[in-house]
Length: 253
Image: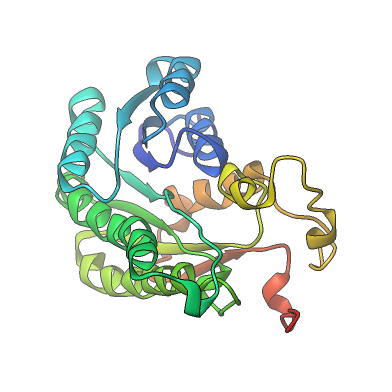
């Protein structure tokens, strides 16, 4: 029997990268998964690949109505909702004085508003199921700042704080809320800025484990937080960064 047997999860940003790896990992551990994303073609393809245990729904995480439809898909298709993984996010590198208000708002709307809307939309269904787990993706930029990432860092610090506030509020309903803080991972979001052919080895060599993360490296941690093994964990921060935050940060002036 799998570690998530009988559980129903909604994973945002689930069509590719970390989200797709999490969806595959959840199904492998016995869960049913609703994959939410804006990328309809790869999202549907992944759901087809995973079979009867998966369903795809178009989900703009900054849209309240899309969130209602996504939660309804989970409860109508699989009968309940036990786990929400707020994985969807956007990244932008920009110097502080060159960051427009529109760009700042775009990052916050997806990353921060999306996490808030997701928790709000899922809470009634999680309550009806007798409790559950919310896993919010923050970042190592939710633990410390980095040049060129003013908007992204703001949104990820917000997610870290919202996680703790929600954990205190939802604990009496047996709903646990934790944040995950990945370091540099080789995903589609990262490659939008580095380029598909860029060698990330030099970046990986800066951390103790000597490499950047791959999407599959995050799956075990999220499975743990989604399942009953972490039943006494809430309001906590779980870091998966190859050791980046174990030492001092380095950057060029």
